[in-house]
Length: 170
Image (cartoon, rainbow, N blue to C red; front, side, top):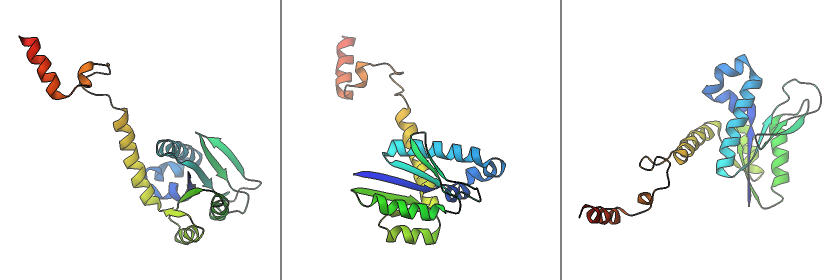
């Protein structure tokens, strides 16, 4: 079963403390860093991720691009991220999927639940993201004894190692 993670991009960026200064200086850079973080999280967790950004007073048609192996959506002029997300939930729920939506907008959370998706607040997502980063970091660490070598001692139980050590010392 496919699992989708749909994120109201500006809602989350505006709620995470890490982005407070960056979003004031350069919102485009904040979006890039955020989408890269979402891509890392989604890849590790196995989600198909979609990050949705409002047009925010921009004129013209929206766009959908693939970036960092996730879908990044910029809505059409006058269309909110909320309405785009709701429409997408209904489309995805036609098949065997589970949809998770990240937003702290209370009205949107209610609509998400009514549409048959799961809601995750921005704060909950932040905590889950931080926990996942720690998990990824642990998986990337090498064993201290082996120093990244493929040693037999790393695969043997301690009792067997002790027995070999006794034999060696005879």
